[in-house]
Amino acid sequence: MTTAFVFPGQGSQQPGMGEAFYEAWSETRTQLDALSDVLDDDLVALCADADTEVATLRETHNAQPALFGLGVAVYEGVVARTGVTPDYVAGHSLGHFTALAVADTLSPADGVRLVRRRGELLAAAGQEAGPGTMLAVLLADPDDVAAVCASCNGVGVGLYNGPQQTVISGTCAGVAAVREELDARTRARFRELDVAAAFHSPVMASAVDDVDQVMASVDLTPASIPVVSDVSRRIYTDPEVARRDLAAQVTSAVDWHGVVGRLREEGVERFVVFPPAESLASLVERIAPEAEVVALDTPDAIENLSSRVEVTDDG
Image (spheres, rainbow, N blue to C red):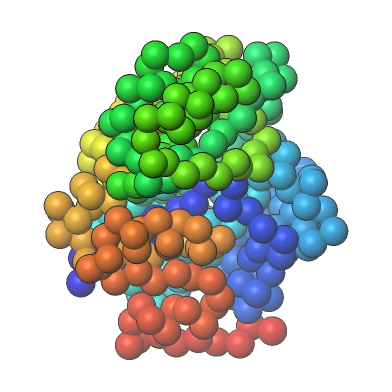
C-alpha cells in the first residue's frame, strides 16, 4: 500500500503530548533525550509533562523544537516496530522540517537547533510588527477569501487547510477588514484561533532574511524519501528546494489541501499522521475521505499499520 507519513505543525501541541510514546518505546526515549542534550533543554518535560506548562509550550521557541523532536522520536519507534517505511513524507508548516529529518535531508540535531532558532526569529518578528492574529474562514471558496485578502493591507491567506477551511493571517486591523468584507458578501463562518503570532503573513516579513541565513548555515543532503512541499506542492529530493521553500514559508501560505491532493495524485492510499495527530488527521480525512488515515494518537495505533507489528514492553 502506497503510504505517506505526515507531521503536524505548531498549534497542534497539547498538554501531555508524547508521554505514552516516551514511556512505551525505548527508541522514542533515546531520541528525545539526545535532542534535549543538543539544546541543553528538557524536551521531555515540554512534550510529556506540559499539563502544568501550557503557557510555556505555547511559546513559539518551545513549541517548535518540542513538536519536531516528538515527530522524529516517534518515527524511530514506528519504523523499529512495524518495518513500515513511507513512500512520501510531508509536513504542515513546522512539520515540513520534521519530514526533512525523516527523509535524511536534515540531521535531527541540526534540525532541533534550526527550529529553536526559527521559533525565536518568528516570535521576534511578531513582537516587532504585531500585534497580529489568525482567523479560520469556514464554508467559503478559498479563491474568494484570497481575493478579499489581496484587496486589504497587512493580511493574506496563511493556511489552505481544506476545500472549505481557509485561515487568514496578518495584522488585527487587516484580518478584521477581511472578515467584515467576507461577512457581507458570503455565507462564511469564522473561528478565532488562539495563536502565538500571525504566522505565514506579512507580519513575519522581518524574519525572512534571518531564517534564510539560518537555513543557509545548515548542511542539507538529498532526501532519501520524496518530500512534498507545503508551499509549492512540488515533490522533491533536491535540498535546495527545501532551502528556498522553507524561507518562503515564513510569509507564504501553507497549502495543505494541495499537499494531500498531490499525494493522492501520486497514488497514496494511506496517510499515517504523527502525534499530536488529531487535528491534522481530521484535515486529511476531510480532503481525502476515500483514503485510509492512521492517526498515531497512542502507541497501540501502530497495530493498524502492519501485521508484522511486534510491540515490546520497554518499561
